[in-house]
View 1 (cartoon, rainbow, N blue to C red):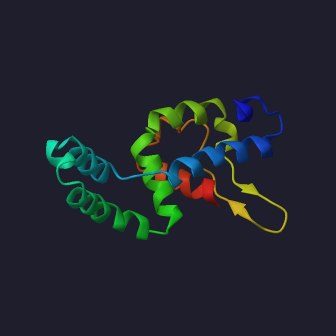
View 2: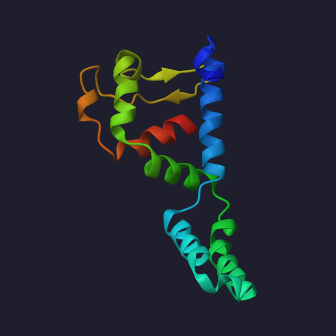
Length: 136
């Protein structure tokens, strides 16, 4: 809500990006989530809590050993966002997204669209490109 109500574009971007960071910090792959849920649903969990806690720890060890926030952000976006959701936002500002953006100091962010009329050409794979641009 704060990001939406903020007039300053820079702050708006930061606030929205914080939502993505928060989501990716707590991201858990769906296959791990499913295995943990199955473990909790097993009626024997009450009789053998030590055994089941080891199963959960084993499932989670790979998740916690992964330190690459960029990969977690990418998976969060690709699992929870559809290109159709993004198309609506890009279409509202298509002229902006059809131009490269260059900052003082030489940082250049490439455009997302070839031209303002190519919004309909966006496909699911473009979510990764958009994520890379956002992160940059």
